[in-house]
Length: 329
Image (cartoon, rainbow, N blue to C red; front, side, top):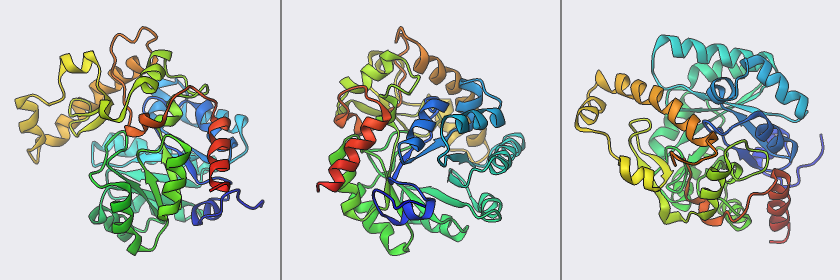
């Protein structure tokens, strides 16, 4: 196995060259983007619903297609929030298929990952778990995860509340590899995260504005034009605040759930139903908005890393610049 270009506990554990995860994104994780991130030396993460529902692949065939584009490792994201039995069974089947197809790195979120850990560890794989604070990190470690995706307050998707530095300081005592997730759009941010002591970074928004991503030109242009202050948090996608670009469409539709939805979201019995309703609605809305060349819906997820993104580039060019910045530090 060749020596990593940047040596950290994460690159050593996965046998990759550069400690960069191309984070799983619904709906933007198309196969070509995932493969490009892995081929460039990092690791691309498959988002199962994106692969099947948005990009139209049978899950196994989608994994096999990615493997025709790169021989390097890829990972899979497992959203394991308590939901319907049908969804749990489908996620379990996706995990089993991924393991059968040679995937050995998994990122879990929104639930107890123990059952995933047991499956993955049985074949020598690794599981990292999303955490926004020590409470959730410890719960993940109790379930046997190998490392943590430290989601800070600048992340896209479901952002945390701590800064990258504060979250590192809080989680470093747990003595497992930490991945900085949130706010990294340029080489300086990458170098700063590694200097803080992170074993790697996870980026999503930066990889939307790439040639390999199939998101619309309007979406990519919005990322390039946006600044950190343009990122707001909407409850109307999943029922939990999600980072999106503030646009005229978002201003018209609002950021907050209605009175009935809020009541259900705070009800022990009603919250899972309400989140399922939001999820079904948002699956269509986000898919349509991300691929719509007209940009009419302007319903675009992004994190505060938009501040460091100034052009649509190729994935290899981004990796080359980040690695060079680290080597010249």
